[in-house]
Length: 592
Image (tube, rainbow, N blue to C red; front, top):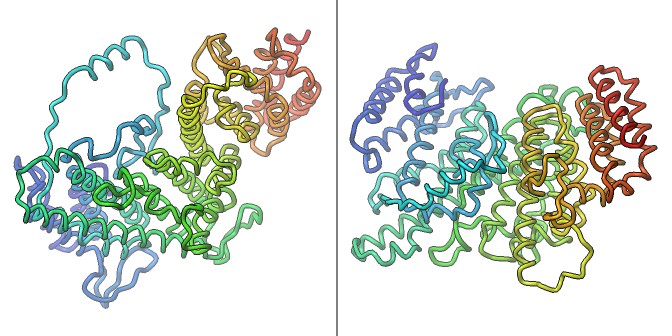
């Protein structure tokens, strides 16, 4: 099956073997004709109902059926194939994305967080959820030519055209049917169907909350194109969409909770298989991974501007604050305590790498939701030391930034960038209000913003700049430039223009945890980690050890670092031995 585009998805139905029923093939051909017609599909009721019919043909909606392990739904003697359901969900994603694009841009969320997305998937409201495919590291600095072109592009006036829906638009008929579809297939036996359900959840949340923003915008309130009756009908349709949105969220949370309560092995136990002997560290773990992706897509799609009052609703962090154990929510108690503890378990100790990566992505979009909220108390969840959410983020980063699977380490690097940049932004806003900090000891903004997280974050951020996997290495290097600024030719750039000496000053002042971490990683189980640790030790000696101001910070740890390098001389992996030799030579030159 090819889900790259809707026309390819429809075409691929005719190539399936054994052949699909004639009704499915005829309907797919009919929908293809709609795609090639010059008329728009936004108000085409036949097209929207055709999508729902295709989903129905891949579901057991008429009578009770059961899923078997192959993903085929059995209904008596009839076998219902999953392919029509998957293609129908792909069409739903495309249709709702296009409908969202027809709304005024201001209603689709603020542009302040667009720079945090790296284009990571379908149906996630900006690509904030990383599910599959290559991730391109964000470029920290543009060339002069690119900057001039970007400035010219932003200076040109843009003519925005929008085609918002009316109360009788077929999109509302589609949205009324989707909650039941999501609830029925969120735990489908076919993983491709579950992934498309997660994408559907994301586009549904994005379109529903964008409608709220549009109804509450000045453009809609000042336009007198609709009569009062039509406007009331439209308001009712939008509110019904919000009911469906919350039903979808409830279905995802219920499935997620049930999976978290299942008995499973942890990485500490290190078993060969699960209790049923069928699951391990490389295969998918039931529907837990896709449930986490659906949760992340939903959170990323909630682009509302505030709580649930009036039409300015749709903010995830405001609507679901009870999930974060906040003191501002007095009801619920321990009823929702499973949420953060479950995410931490999935990030830190779950045996399956896909689950660890997906749960880390979920934490990333939750950080984004905190920053997106207009309530400053929601940002305090990231800053306050007694915040349960901050504690979960800390433990997740501690584990995932040193995970042996590059896929998980990459997800941890993305979470690290988002979390650190959020803390820097919060610190910058609070610092502008307080001008009495001139007498404080000189330190970088990173150290001031992250505070107690520095001894844990900084060593891992440094080492991942040398990690063998190119995606992790390049992404971590760009994160370093974003945090400390690109001043000078070297990686640990130090500049008089940078507060606290930039990255080199931060490394020097935190030499103790950094050197201990490098020494520990020289004895890690993963040869790629040992190789990166040797390169990190060589960098310390070459750049910090020879610096006239900061070399005294490294001096007490020279013996410990040399012992770690000498241990790597006897490593069974020749690249590690090679890096140890180069690092020792660099060390001798620095301290000769």
